[in-house]
Amino acid sequence: MTDWKAYALAKPGARPDEPWEADLVAKVGGKIFVFLGGSGSGEVTSLGVKCGDREAADEWLLRYPEDAVKMAYIGQHGWNTLVVGSRIPEDELRDAIDTSYELIVAKLPKRVRESLD
Image 1 (cartoon, rainbow, N blue to C red):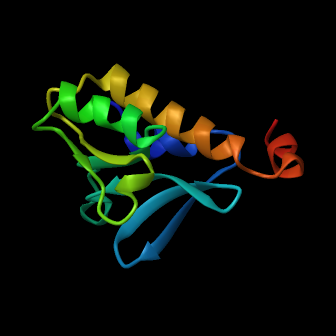
Image 2: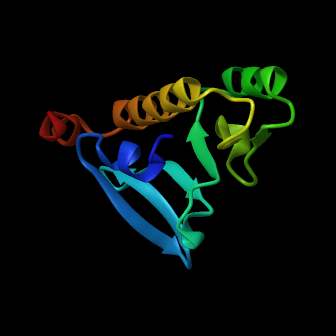
């Protein structure tokens, strides 16, 4: 079983943050790339990730209608919540974190991206 917090924070430049009480996120270059849901309880039960544009994010909703949900407030920008320990295989959840990280890093200023290497 994957330790989702450790997996996210192992990314180059990743830092933990708790911008809201008991809500842990992983940031790179000051930008959130994954929300670690349920982490206030010590166990990650969901992952909030950037899946690309809304069309790409909707693919998750079609493939996993019971385990993927458009995120409130930022969902229109391609963010979904994916349930951990559900029908979504762990390798796909890891890929989702990787994709979210890459999408966020790509939008960072060049000097910040270069400092991550």
